Length: 312
Ligand SMILES: [Zn+2]
Image 1 (spheres, helix red, strand yellow):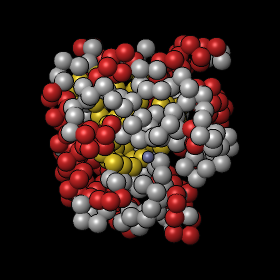
Image 2 (cartoon, protein in one colour):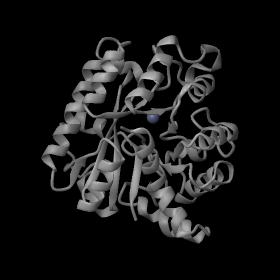
Image 3 (cartoon, helix red, strand yellow):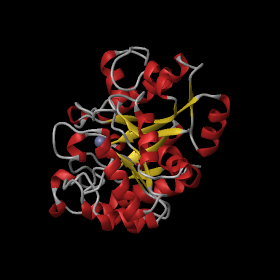
Image 4 (cartoon, helix red, strand yellow):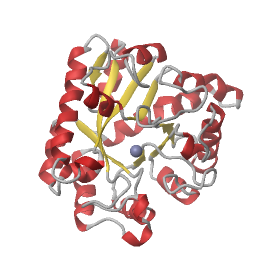
């Protein structure tokens, strides 16, 4: 079965360690990818807050370089994918599709030219904010009073629609979420967020948000981080299934995807310790009564559908 994960922070780990994915550390490395039969992975260039003042673009370029070197050094396993067709071709060849994302609009340093150049460098998804306010809008830690998208943030949404890039609303505050949903002419993604009805955390989506995003053809990648699943330090794979169930109930079977947050979190549920274990979800989804066609959608086909629709 095709497994497609919408969010892993592996580039941050490699950026610090100087390794190239054969390091047998972390949650996503060559071994775990192979063991887990991963078909496609969004690799995220995350802008750490220590780089916000003057080094956001600089550090993002370093991670993009790392992404391309990682593919080059592991060509027998990995390949770049910039759209749905690339992913289909990689599938046929038995290669793992690597898609490039940026988490944090700080990387743009206020310039649409930088957005366009990022696209040319292979970036296909931008998480507009992390947890704080930036030039585009406000992250969830700023609260609702911080306001929604700025004028620049609105320009970024339009330009991303035009370029054919995925707009990611994970981390945005609620007012920003609604601005994006209203403005975007294409389906929108929440790459790594869960249900707020099950776990009341601002990083998670309300039922109204889930329904609206789903009605627009978008997807929500279920996040494996215990704090976003249960609010406890520990969780199990069954809590991930609970969030899947809820997303299906509210948004339907076409809106659910995976957004593990591997290599970006300090703990993971029992049964989902790294990406070799993601496939453990398949028999458990069967046990919960999902048909194999629906399980395929959740494990990867829904996210692939949105890639076909949005990415040029
Ligand atoms: Zn994140």
